[in-house]
Length: 102
Image (cartoon, rainbow, N blue to C red; front, top):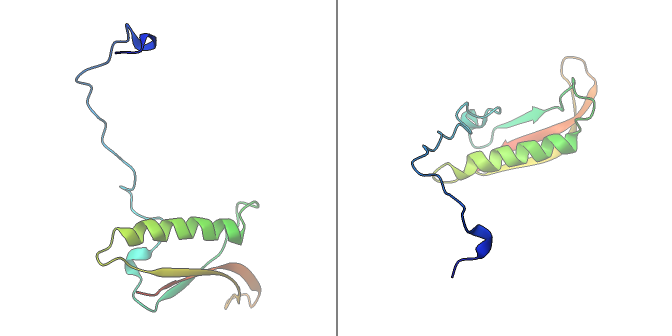
C-alpha cells in the first residue's frame, strides 16, 4: 500500500541523464608519470595563507588513492609530511613528499 504522503506526485519520464564530467580534465597531480621508487615534494599553496601541510597531505592522499584504484594492478603510494631544504633558496620548507611504492 502506498503512503498517502506521495499521493498525487507526478514523476518525470524520458529526461536525459547529463554526461558525467567529473575527472575528465585529468588529475591536477602528476601521478601518471610516477615510476616505482619515484617521489616528489609538494608545498602548500603560497597564495592561500590557510593552506597547511596537513591540508595538502589530505588532498594528495585522496587524489593518489582515487588514481591508484583505477590502475590494474592497483598502484601504491605513500606520503609523509616533511621539512626539506629548497635547493634554490636554501631555506627549509614544510610540505609533503609522495613516493610510489608499487
